[in-house]
Length: 314
Image 1 (cartoon, one colour):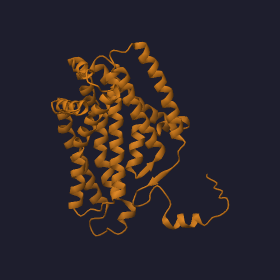
Image 2: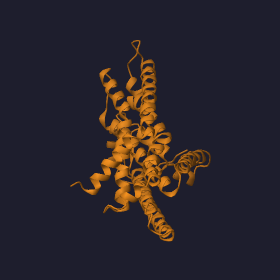
Image 3: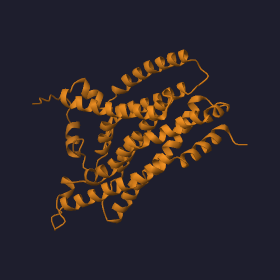
Image 4: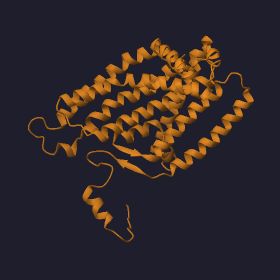
């Protein structure tokens, strides 16, 4: 006899396979990634000195900047404008068809049900990003250089961005009654994060600190080979909180007052978790050119300093 979790996973997988939104995303993301990859390879070939001037190319134009960043940027666009509709369709569809009431008859917690839906959506997102993986294989077949740590960092950033989008879509679908309303809420949050980045560029200060945790800024740092612990932890907190909030509001038999109280408690816990994660300073530079840190010789020289180091910046 199948367990409730395996039954729900199979049911959600069939829903994903029957989703027109998912198939549209597959049809669109392929040309997007393909055009980005072709443009990146062409520009890389022109700027890397094809006509016998290849000396010093690695210092001026690395695959991280010239190939991986523009190619995977197409996935960022798909995550912002296509993936939310797939997530909303998977979560809201059960409420409108009545399938959610059948799901609630199985001995599964609301958070477990939402987590299974999120896992199916993540699997669908990974399948949708296969054109970018094909681009990596094509680059290798061309004889291009691949530095695995920086490539893994870029991929991890886009997977994390996809998880954030899935959590946002699940939350919007759970809080609203209609998929169209959920889509508007998701788009509003996306545009709002862009406005924060704009305000940070103009005003700096606290706006700049807040903008560092927006999806756009997070992906940009991963795309340059920088893996920050605080950004990763804040993103993980937002993902868990989004899924938990969706689980709270998908419990149809619970009173609205209790769900509001639980939402308030979740907001307080999320604020404390983000405050704790934001003070973590660990980071890793995975770029082959060490563009985010000192060179090996400079690091060795800095380690020999035993006293205080004073830096005056102008």
